[in-house]
Image (cartoon, rainbow, N blue to C red; front, top):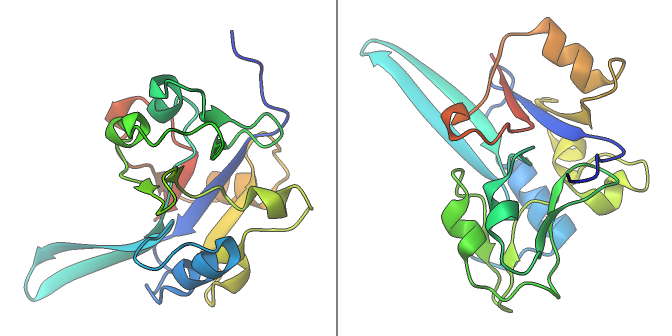
Length: 184
């Protein structure tokens, strides 16, 4: 049985407040020195209805930091792993062979091959969380649509927000138990 993480960080994106400006995408690229042509975050758009009664939902998306992450169980070297301090899914560049098993198993298409050969993805700005700071995407969002916090702490901003709003998660049938929530 795997050891339980000390904390369990997650993320919520408010689909009402998000305007799809991509500031979070740019902040992430800058903070994490993501190479040109690649991204750890992206903006999704979903249009529903029939003209003239259309509704569009926009949200910033990234790795779901799943509790039952297939990328972790399918990684042959252990490079994809759970960080015990934050409960997030991380990749050890030194241990990654670039075999792409994690990419093939991720139902969220949240990984890419870094030009230097390892598999890269959102780290939930783990380096910032360990310093008691928030993520670059949360810090830059002009509409405060992104919230990151501890899911196990009922007093965290994230936990309070999840209790107060209707939420949905993506691809729940995959059984990954994502720690990423869309607020409706």
